[in-house]
Image (cartoon, rainbow, N blue to C red; front, side, top):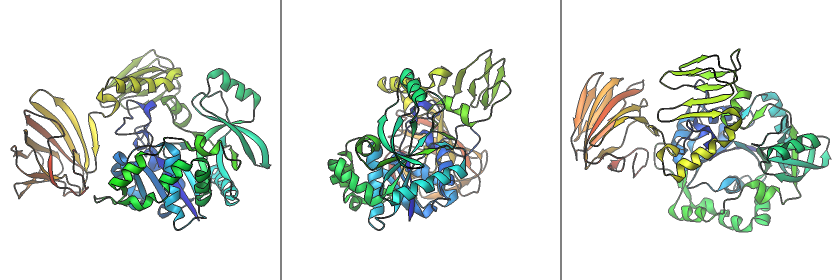
Length: 479
């Protein structure tokens, strides 16, 4: 039996300003005109194992949106494990292995990041079958991508003695090297990019964790007894309070460092299919079509005399004149301008924003919620204007506010507004006023997205001023 394990806990900080802490890279459609990365990953893996045999490990903050995005392919929410906090890949994989091993200890796990690009599906499936065969024999297998350039954004694997005609023992791992060392690796040969894809039996992995990471194993062992169903609309798996404490005590270690580097059963299978970890904006050069001047353009962009550039507009016009080899990404609250050769360094921006405690590192004016999203259009001392979008059939919590009143005006679709126990149906251009302290709820009974404009007035205008009485998503705090 084979299980797909999708690791969806990353932040994608090099894709700022599109990617934020509250809306990571795997939930984005990077080119503004396709499936999100995690949707593409699941669709790619379904030929290997059904959605019923696919598990996802995700941060709890992104679990609802992940389930919503994957609902169209009937992904069962109960197959998503929501980590209370990120503890790197060894913990996430150990969690999945423990879950699988209860009923299927000899099952093979295929570990796949949620945010990679793979171009050759036939070649990919062929290599996966080879890796499965080695995993059946008790090896810990990873796929190595043959390098075609001295890339400094990837880790490297040095091949050791051959195991058979198509695989090698692993001599060593090297974290992201500088340009000189990467060039040396390329010249010497025998090195592969670390793909982050792994294959092994669930029991084999747990045995390796017990041997090489005994402290982590003791925490992981039996932790699934401290996991329960989320009580909201999507019944994914969450940790009990005791489970959260236990998981928080895990060290943050990658599976490469914690196990693969130490085990003599570690094997690399060279892979020739087109692959990219979509680790920075410059990665789009390899996966998206270009215009005759070598530009990758999306959104409302006017480009004149530009070459070899990545230009992403948003809702306003982005005009670029006479630029070469640059990245320009416009978002609602931030604009990135970067030399393409320094795309990997965008992470420095997010680190600086975080150290300065600026919200631009965490969230954008558009904030996802399980029921839809809201966008802050304008904010002043005593009023705030939002655009609220509610998915068909969804509803906000029954709530009240101590410090503010609200006025809703429908601009698209139909709303059902509950106010002090009474229901009001609102069509386009119709409004309703919600005074301070009044219990109210908004829902979308229609088949199209409901859009309304909300004007808040009061002495305190923030998301903490919510007293929640009922909520189909099981939330008890803001949102």
